[in-house]
Length: 303
Ligand SMILES: [Zn+2]
Ligand SMILES: [Zn+2]
Image 1 (cartoon, helix red, strand yellow):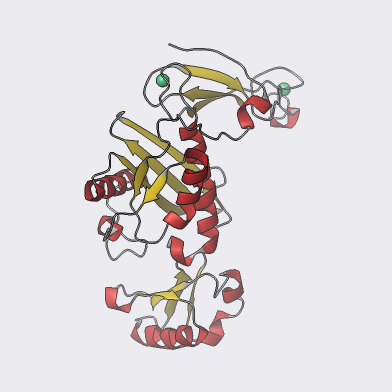
Image 2 (image 1 turned 135 degrees about the vertical axis):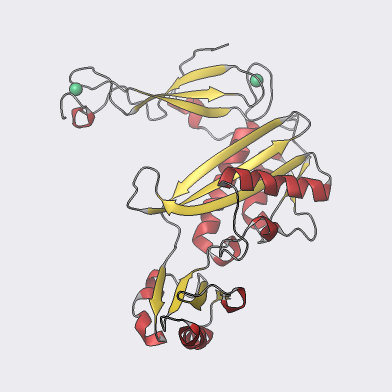
C-alpha cells in the first residue's frame, strides 16, 4: 500500500518526544560497546524515549574486529553492527539491542574528502524489526603521517587536535600487534614511541595516526550524540497505520524540476517515509520547501 501525502516543513522537522504510553517508555535496551559509547547514546534515549541504555558487563566488541586491524573486520559495516547488537542482546538476554559502527573512507558525495560514516542500529525481537540511522560527517578528526623523529611532526599535532584527540603509533611498514601503541596523549610518551617505532621499522619511520575509537576522539563522540538523537527521534515516531515505532525516511525521489525549463534535475524532489514493520509509505516534499532547482543544477540549461 502506497499512501501519498504532502506535509509542510513545520510538521515534519519539529522534534518528537515520545509520550509515556509509547511502547518503549520505561524499557531498557542493551548497548554493545567496549568504549563507553553509552555516554553519547544514553541521554537521547532517556530524554526522547524514556528508555534506559544498559551495557552488558564484560562485553568485548573487539572480537568482531578492531579499528587498528589486529583483528580484521570480516563483514560490511552493516554486518558488523548487526553482529555487535546481537552479541549484546545475547549477553544481556534483552530482546532490545543497540550497536554502533563507524567507518572512515571517501565521502559518499565528495570522494576527495575523508568522511566518518556512523551507523546506529536498533533491533527489537518482540516486534521483529530493525531500525537504523546513518550519519556522515567530514568533521571528525582523522589525521595520519610518518616521522623519523618527534621534531618531524611539525604542524601535524595541531591538525590532529593532539592531545585532546589521542594518537596511535606503530612502525611504518611493519604490522606487529605488540608494536601498536594506542591511546597516546602524552607528548613525552609520543616522542619515546616515535623513536622506538622508527627503530623497529624497515623504513626507519614511525607511523602516527588518530585513535578513532570513540572514547579517544571527542569529535567522533559529538557525531555519535547527534546520531543517537536522530535514531531516538525516529523510534519515537509510530507508524500511522500499524503503530510500530521507527517511522522515518526510507527512500528519496530525485527529479526536482528546473526553475527555467521545468525538466527534472538530479536533486531530491521528495522524501519517502516508511515503517519498519508494514509496507505503508508516505511521500513528503523537501523539508526546506524547495519546489524547483536553480538552472545551474539543470543538465539541459547548464549541461
Ligand atoms: Zn533547465
Ligand atoms: Zn506500519
